[in-house]
Amino acid sequence: MNTIVNDSDRANAKTQKAVQSWDDADPADDGLEPDFKPLTPEQAAAWRQRNPVTSPWRVLALQVLVGVAVAVLTGVVSGQFRLAASVAWGVVSVVVPGVVFARALARQMRLKQAGAALAGLFVWELVKIVLTVALLLVAPKVVAGLSWLALVAGFVVTMKVYWLAIPIGAALGRMRRKTPA
Image (tube, rainbow, N blue to C red):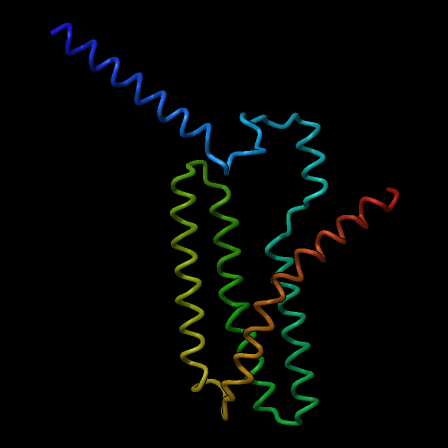
């Protein structure tokens, strides 16, 4: 019996050495620091200052502004109300689900249980997707003479505004830090 235990211990030691040498030899780890080093409070504060949080409400406000501008511009350039209305419905199909999701996200952030917050995040993301699809499906009934091309253009432009909100928010944050209080 003692022999079996010793053999088992030797096999485990060999396996551990093999795994360790395999991990050490991984070329993807070359140049990486071996240990995780937490930031000091000062380093964390400096990182937060360099990387400000972009508020979802700011993103939504920018989406509304750009969406309204695109819808008005479409109406003025084309002279057709139906095209402007189609673009506007594309904007609505992005903004309304975004507002619902941002409100739910704000509530989820208050939860103390991380698992419940994460589950809620997935549920509300699903609600956002279903609401978006529902708004797109009712578009022909709501907008007379709907132009799907104009609707999709308004939808895509409004969605892409999110990528503008991040650098704009960072630039505003830098401007605020440079302005004397």
